[in-house]
Image 1 (cartoon, chains in turn purple, yellow):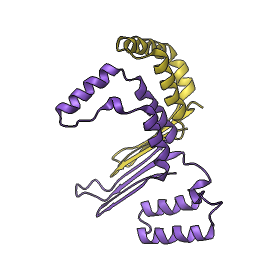
Image 2 (cartoon, chains in turn cyan, red):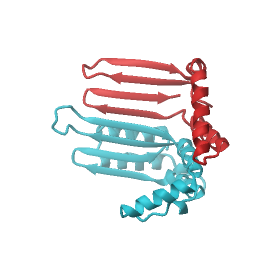
Image 3 (tube, one colour):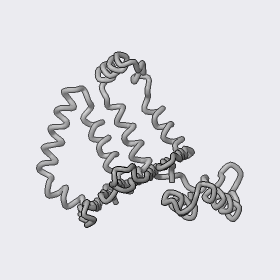
Length: 143
Length: 86
């Protein structure tokens, strides 16, 4: 996403514009910046490097005022973290599996391979989560 | 590249900001004896639990190298904490 796109998202996050206005602006931006060669699209120019999590919530009545969370995590950091999972000894995974089953979550962690997790992270650049709730807004996207 | 500077900003409930700049390399150099002890201790514990020491060091190094660019900003009312790694 380019700088103008980021500005639009920032304005949306700050509540300066509505989601409809942001959509119109992004559409206008895409019209001004025609797509590159087939298949690349506006995102094809550069791969995203960060996962961004934005949370804005209004005052919950406690009088503390609004809350805001802005987290930017390098995708490389996620990859490095995922690679660390290969270090977890098999005995620990077996015990974790047993505990999960005991708590009603039958997930076999030994089936989770680092390569699969890395592939998952590689596909994260397409992820965009937008949750609009009265009083709070959550956005997760890559940039 | 390893992190060079960690910037922390903290806003207290009275609205005043506290800023802290941590130059990573000089601080790591000053604390290197303790860091060395921690690394050796970590490797021994890892060995006890069957974790490969070389893999653990490589993984920790990758994590460290990937940190620049990370940013955490949390605001709750008048209190705020901002951490940037560059």
